[in-house]
Image (cartoon, rainbow over all chains, first blue to last red):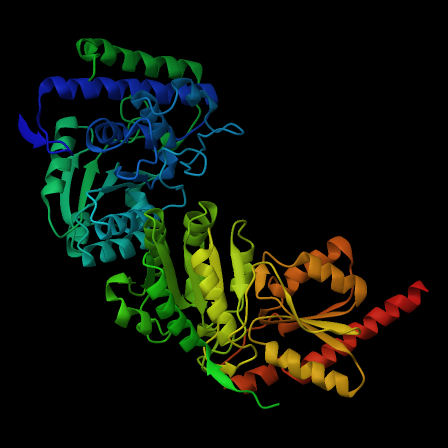
Length: 298
Length: 321
């Protein structure tokens, strides 16, 4: 059991019950993702499923937000730089009560607020339109700098894909964030080892990855990315780091929670047919049943 | 013609300093070229409101976006080449698509960059910037226009790109100069042909009108700093009443100000247009005067273009009658 405090300094403990409750929510989010992909007939399944625990811990525990006012000035800011994880983020919004659950069915259809890549022009809960990769960290940095200038206790969060960090823009931002000692900036890399249609090892090597970020002046935490307690602890630790930004390298599994998708390059996107949908839902439902004692949250 | 001259980049630097005193939430973001673009005036007075990102223009645009989202008015200031297309994708998504209040200053726009050659020149930024749906694009002609446009910039809501030159350059206007977005201004009425200028070639237009007058040709001059939005009403009036146009810009003629004028004309009153600017070529290292002459930007070339436009119009009219 780890002693941690929330954003408001209120002490709480990561106990088994809370972890299980968040795990339960994660499975509801996975249900939403699968429902959306099946009904719409397309979407980025793998990149959304690998994000679930990261997003649920952020939106249910870490981020300071006002569920009735997306543009509350003192909110923490979160940018999903890997904009193609859209279905994952929208599903978390739905479970958090920020958008109606039935709106998920409009994903990628004409006039929807739920654009194929997350889009702040259409949906106020999204801070920044992304999808052209490598841009989110710079904007998160600008937000963090602005918050510090205003003397506000606002934290700026950014999730990037691992492949995304091949973009030069990311390293420009990394260099700059360290120079300006931006300790209210937390980057998270969804390190699932797969990208587009291929395994990352066919790409120019990014190793030694941790050492690169450290050399750029960042505090680096390696965290199992589907471990709720570990993520909550990491967010807490990041808040204790002073005078440098922190990055969590979250080791995840692409397609996590749907056995036939896990760690499969072909499930970066793809069409979920009825039998595949039913198989996925039965796997998710089995886990929900096992966690049913923790269905009541907050 | 003898012109009084004043430095365009010093006008940029001094106006930013002046605005700093008026607009407390204004920030200047540098990408290494602080003394080249004269943001040193601002940073010496307001170091706490100056941000240095290094030679990293993509990050510069992203950081400016984040700061704008937090209520600041960021001016990103570097060479037009790097300010515009080095970070074009970041500008497209973070600034233009999201309609963020970032002001992008493209200094050293065009080919007059102190003989540094094609790598430091920028002749396709207008084309790139004006093709972005939400972007406002302004080109500046002299120190007074620079000052007026930058004063406008702090009031502007949304994405804004401003081209500014480098060198000591003829002063055309005076302190009374007023800038109005989307409006062209007559410097001289004319019934035979109209020279439409955007940016630093304006003195050549003025000299050309005088050359033409000597041969009995009545050439009007319109100055149009606002490339987008462009003054459609004025362009249509000129097309109806005069029917022959020369456009001038320190930019490639493909996709820039001249193209913007032509787009308006073909919708309403197609009339002959001649285009002064880089004729789909890159320039090179040389003093400004040599470049102006070689790339056919000076008054005699403008006058020749005016004669061609008039001739085409007359031919067209005689065919119709």
